[in-house]
Amino acid sequence: MDSTQSFRFFNRGPSPVARLIFFMLLSVLLLFIDGRYKHLESIRNVLALPIHALQRIATNLSTQPGALLDELGNYLDTQGNLVRENVQLRQQQTAYAAQLLQLQILQAENAHLRKFFDVREHADFPMQMAEIVYAERDIFKRKVFVDKGTQKNVAAGQIVMDDIGLVGQVTRVYPWLSEVTLITDKDHAVPIQMLRTGLRAVVFGSGDVSNLALRYMPSSSDIQVGDVMVTSGIDGTYPPGLPVAKVTQIERDPAYPFARILCAPLAGVDQQRQLMIISGLHKLPELPVEDSKITESKNKKLKRSKQ
Amino acid sequence: MSKDQEFLLPASGAFIAASLFVALMLNWLPWQGLWLAVRPDFAALVLLYWCTHKPHRIGIGIAWMVGILADVSDSSLFGQHALAYSVLAFGGILLHRRIQMFEVSEQPMQVLPLLAASYGVFALVHWLSGGHLSWEYFLGCLTSALLWLPMSVLLQTLRRSRNDHNNL
Image (cartoon, rainbow over all chains, first blue to last red; front, top):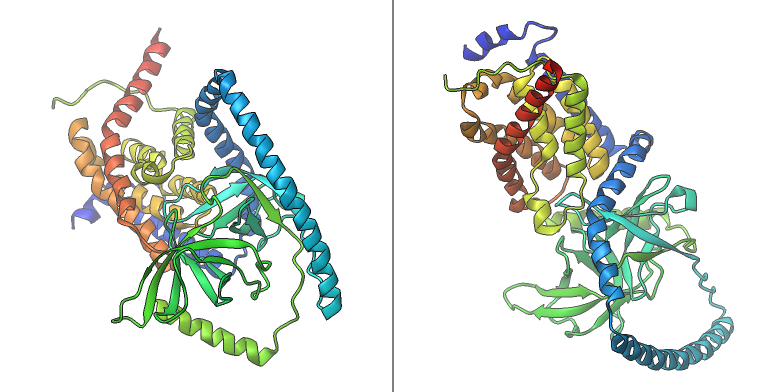
């Protein structure tokens, strides 16, 4: 009764309840369309232009004092430090030069062998550098925005890495920006292969900054702390052989069928500012229809068992 | 009746728009980690302020539009913030007389449930669309309620000083 009385105050236009219902229905409709059919990307792109510019300004305004301090610190760096660093860099360069030489020899040998076995040559992936503009402001997600978009031929599904290993995947593209989902995002899956044993598995993000989880591995599987995982390339999304993570902790509890395996990403998923976007992956042959149905049903089962 | 009886000129549309703009910019600062969790939702607060103080000017429609802007910037699902802000604005409009009855220092406890409802709607949509929830998220509505007092005092003084300016 109370509520009906208070509505007398708002006799302008439709009542708040009517408006609320209208806008709630509108929101739910948008949620449904966006969540199911992804038809709203063009509207989002148009709105994103001014908003991303403003977000960039906000980020720059707030990081400028920090950048200034950094520059001051660099300026005050003593000569001794610089000399030491110089010597260190020289040593590193010599070491790298030797490694580079070996790499060239290995590449030549590899090409030779590949021709020998008539294996399809892996494409030499073109890369482009991109810089992180800002991180996602949503506490539930682990995403960053980088400064290359459709204007530079970035497409959703491309791989993002730094100089050490895999960082994430481009999931949404705007004209001048693209959104990268990090491999640590909750339930983000990467198909991997153990470098030591060749064991294939899928590593999942845990939504945590520095942890990945290797699920559904039997307790008896041959995995040791320190094992390095590289992408297996089986899914056709990630090119094979990129370093992904290292096993940091294994718990084998006989009460559970699966071992609990935690891994740490190798790449500086949260440290780098410059990233590389790998484009132009080679196409895998299409899956036969029946096979894809089977894998789909398997995936569904996997999802169910997760919940 | 100890409430401020000062006469406030109706806030101009430009002032309301500017305050909403500043609030959105504050939301878009690069908050990270724990700071992101305890970040008050400035846009929601300013919206609620105008909904309770000018319920005929700022309604559910404007709240919805601000929500769409927030959705684009957070790359959340279209309508997620919009739905949460519409619920918030509805609560603010429904209870604006009740909230204004209290003194400014007592108002945070009154707006907390409204903010919690809007945070709850956002989290519910997130959960229904398959995301995971973390409890730190709801810290944000506590800090938002705490910020209510300084923010409404600030907006009130800004409105007052504008009037003085006009009189001179």
